[in-house]
Amino acid sequence: MASTNSFSQQFVQIDTLLQQTKHYWQLLPFEHLSFPWADNSELVDFVNSLSSQELEALDADDLALRSALSRYLDYELDILAPLSLEQQPEVNVPPWLKAGIKGRKWQQIEKFSSLLNSDKLPVLEWCAGKGHLGRLIGFTQQRQVTSLEWQQSLCQHGAELSKKHNVEQQFYQSDVFSEDVTQYLMPKQHAIALHACGDLHSSLLQRASKKRVEHLSVVPCCYHLIQHQVYQPLSTLAQQSSLRLSIRDLNLSMQQTVVATTREKHHRRVEVAWRLAFDLLQRRLRQVESYLPLPSIKQSMLTGSFEVFCQWACDKKGLALDKDEVDFNTLEQAGWERRALNTKIELVTHGFRQLLERWLLLDRVLFLQQQGYEAKLSLFCPTEVTPRNTLISAKLLKPH
Image 1: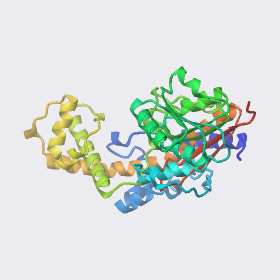
Image 2: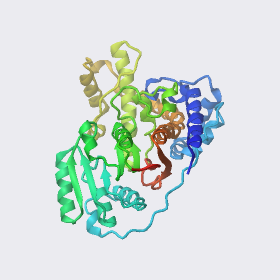
Image 3: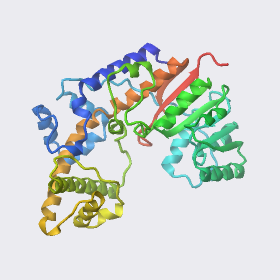
Image 4: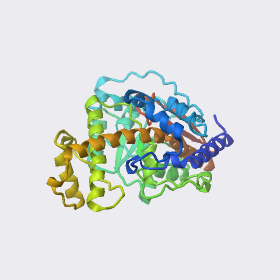
C-alpha cells in the first residue's frame, strides 16, 4: 500500500513536469499550420523521419513513446510508478446472465466484479445503466444491490432483468448531482462505479466520503465531461497547483484507442483530412486566420464526396460557398498533407496523455486520503480490454 507521502511525491513530480512541458501538450494540433515547437529541430527531424506505420506503432505504445520523446526533450517523461494488475479469482457465470452484453463490455464487468469479494457489505451501484454489473455481483456474491440510474427506461429494464434472474437488486431513478441522492448512501456500504464519466464519479467520491461510506471501488472515465469550463481539483495539493486544465486539456487524457476496425480507422483518417481541408477553406472565406470547429458528423457522410462535405460544413457555419471558385481536388490534397502534420503533432501530445491521466487519478486518491480513507491505485483489467483500466480502491480507516 502506497503511503500518503508516496502519492503526494508522485503527484508533485508529475505536476512539475506537466507545468514545465505545457508548450508540448497544452495545445490543439488542429489549430496549427506548422509545428508549434519548431525551435526544437531535433524533435522535428525525429517525427518527420517516422513512416506512417512507425507513427501508428509508437502511438499505440505509451511507454515506448515516452521513452522516445525523452531523447529529444530536456525532460524525462518516463516517471510513472507502475501499477499492478489485480489477480482475479475464476467465477463460473451461467451463459444466460451475460446474454445481450457485448464481449468486451462483459469482460470489464466480469473482471471488476471479481475484485469485490473482500467484504460482504451491501453494494451501491452508481450510474448503473441497466445494472449489469450490480446484477452480476448480486448473483455471484449473494449481496444486496442498490442501483442508481438517471434514465427511467434503463431502471425499468434493469429491474425486469434482476427479477427474471432472482437477484436482490433495487433500482432507483436518481440524479446523482442532486442532494436527494445522499439518501441512498450509507456508512455500511460498498459504493462502486465502473466508467462513470467526469463529474459523475467525482460526485460519488465527494458524497460518499461525506457520508462515511466504508468502501469505494471506482474506475474513472471521460475526465473531460465536466460542468465547468476549467477542471475543479478535489485534493488540497491539486488545488494549490498552478496547472489549469480546460475541457480540451482533459480530453487529451482520453486519446488512446486500443480497439478499432479497419473501416473505423479509415473513416477517422478521412474525417480528419476533410476537417483540416475545410479549415483552410473557411480561413479563406472568412478572411480570419483561426481554427473554426465543426459539429460531429454521421459516418455515412465520409463515404460521399469531399465537395458535399464542404457544402454541409459551410451551411453549418453560415458561410457562402461559390463552388466555381474552389478547386476541391487541390483543397482535399492539402487536407491530407495537413493530416500528416497533425498526426505528428498529436504524437508528441500523446506522450503526455498518461501523465495527465495519472495526475487526475492521484488528485482523486489524495482527496480520499484527506477524508480518512486508505486508498490505492491498481489495474482491474489489461489495457487490451479497455485503456480506462485504473481502479481506485478506498477503505475508511475508522468506519462507524
